[in-house]
Image (cartoon, rainbow, N blue to C red; front, side):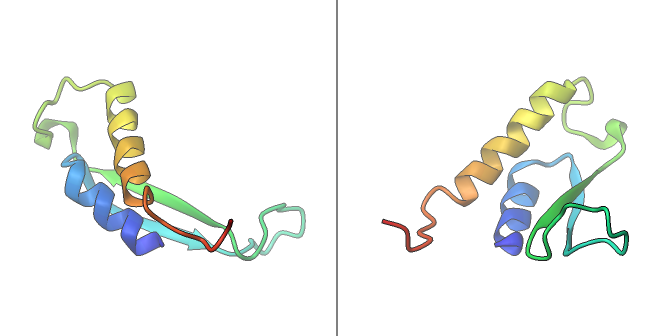
Length: 80
């Protein structure tokens, strides 16, 4: 699932330089994150390398969300 997300965002959002995920729990016992959860991190290109350097943060977030939603629009998790 993570690879699908990364490919979709990288293909549709040219401002993104790379993406990666961190899965599992931290070594600190107080971390409530379960071992099967992941955090996705997005590293952006320098703003002067963007197709539209004046693009707002909100516009960029909306594009990333749209790409992520499209990547999983047809996913069937076996739920009725």
